[in-house]
Image (cartoon, rainbow, N blue to C red; front, side, top):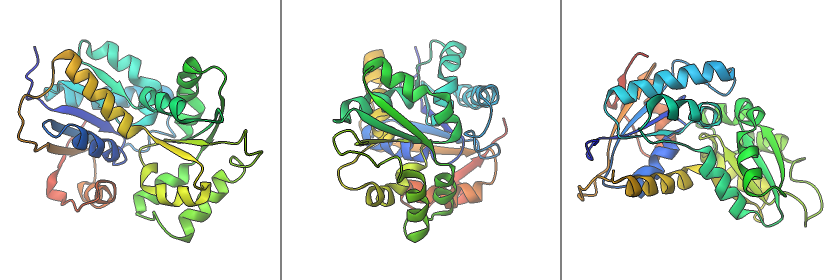
Length: 275
């Protein structure tokens, strides 16, 4: 039986998964968290599936070594190609990715039945979101577009203004055209970097479009699994504690991570680790 006070492990290729961590902290204020950003090898989105599986196994192994009681793949690319491998490798440890919760939320949100998936090249080409949604609702029309520059904009903190808006229009304008009754009405933010650009995306897409951020839905699934498996921390002091790990450049992790968490981070708060 795991120690109920053990941390929940969360990993991403970099800092984008901090949006998932923020949602987890809000939903689970009594839990402890251990976050690993594999900043030495990001981005995962442009890597081959075999490479992503190898990196994900190594990153997950580092968290498992430290005694986590549940593992969250905050990386959409890793969730798309490696979640089944990690479930098998680390059984009976619960392993939760962000794709299945996000797909379920998109299926529930769409009214026109036309959904647009945005993500990295790896997430879009891998088709995991498409398969997960069609398994629930085979009648859906699903388009997908890779938006790699969104990652760079988020990492630089360029989340408002004419530059990110121009990039968003270039990626999305054609995808959002068409007759109103059949056009895209739901956009999946299929990369953990993308939620910080939501304000820009809402202006480009218009008020009728719904956005699905898998961070919130993943946090809900984690809460359900903790309750079902009897893993919830009985501590009720309401102070979610976090340790941050990075495989490279803790100073940059702290600077960029501040954008994603919404509050300043110091490099001294980020432990440098090797995989």
